[in-house]
Image (cartoon, rainbow, N blue to C red):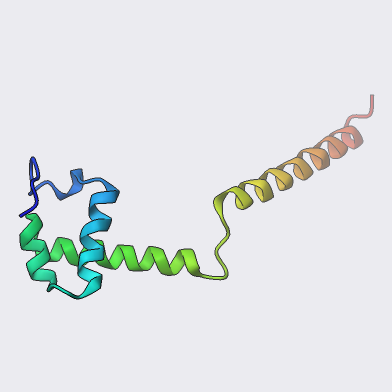
Length: 96
């Protein structure tokens, strides 16, 4: 059995430790019940972790997803364009 300070507090586990548990489950060498019992979490918790892990992987591999830094750059560009347009409109309304 894995040594945990509080095996019932699954929410306190690091992502790395959760991933290790999920990978054990996905290898299919052991049942999900066995892995969950071995690390001291419920089968339901192990199933949740596995589902979230797989969903996140599918999203990351999706061709329609955009890396965060690209999305930020796109939004910054749009914000700059909008700021320029606001300046143009402001000058039209209040010519000095």
